[in-house]
Length: 106
Length: 122
Image 1 (cartoon, rainbow over the protein chains, first blue to last red):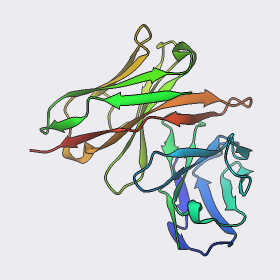
Image 2 (cartoon, chains in turn brown, red):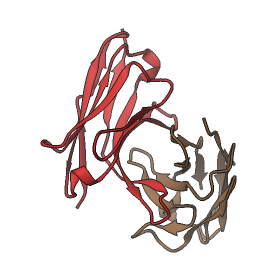
Image 3 (cartoon, one colour):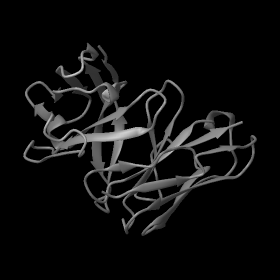
């Protein structure tokens, strides 16, 4: 199985900060990498698919980059609504696997 | 508007069985692969199973293979997850999710149901 490792597991940031979350795959997954946001008590929401494509309706302050084994989710200017847990997920090979999550706190 | 609604969760004893359902609307059901993903209380997301758009292919996480069965009834726009020999550690919210392919053939989960809670306890 492909292991997905996210870092950091949590971070503290302020409104307006630039935030970067990294995700590393245990093998080359090309650009088969998606990012999700989950707020407490809510359903996961797709943010970025295929490493860098912004899902419709998602604010442009979210961006994704990377290919192969190393990927990044960037929030250019953190907003109050962005405090949540973020997960990466590979879809290169079944079983699909998620990273452990990164909790973004105030 | 895509809508996925899970049902069938509840309390079951260890070793017991449960069947979850996910009723879909707002999109052509037979065009999409469907997934089950679970989340234990306070934990991260864990992928469980996938069924292809036509039901011809199914894959499972190692942890559930041989005990869980994913299926779909296209006449009812409904996805199922039959869970047998349940374990305490499988207590979780179970989500169904729709798979969609990007132009690059990368699959992603673009719509999720609200989830149904399964509690495995004596």
